[in-house]
Amino acid sequence: MRRFFAVALVVFLWFGFAAPASASLAGDNVSGLTPCGQNEAFLKRAAGAKTESAKARFDFYGSSSLLCGTDGLPHLIVDGDLAHAGEFLIPSLLFLYIAGWIGWVGRAYVIAVRGDKNPEDKEIIIDVPLAIKCSLSGFAWPLAAFKDIASGALFAKDDEITVSPR
Image (cartoon, rainbow, N blue to C red):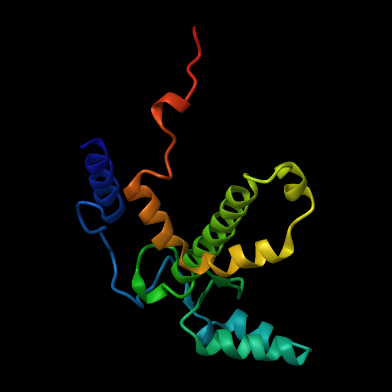
């Protein structure tokens, strides 16, 4: 029952109880920012680009939905507006997925070498075939984590947790 309430609390906090207030519609003026393709300072910087990669980057920024300030530099909009999801939300979720993958694979590797006679040696000198095997199975880490959470395998038992005598 405690897990149910914990999951319910996480869901309510994650999705929120009410939609966030918005003072403007998507694409409206956001704190004085203008689309980079229409910003004079940005166009001045783009005209001064020397290398081909810089010119390509300015062309991409100018044709995208990025907003620039008075300095001519693109600014990230992190306000929950899905019109700017590609600027922050999608890279953030991708970062969390990759970080979770790395953590889950490391956990799987440590669990796999735990039964060896010298597991500390396997943590210092990596067993590459085993590490690759663990890495290839890590892509589905959200499903595996959910399975371990639901079964209780991810949590330590109460008798395994030491309590200070104070």
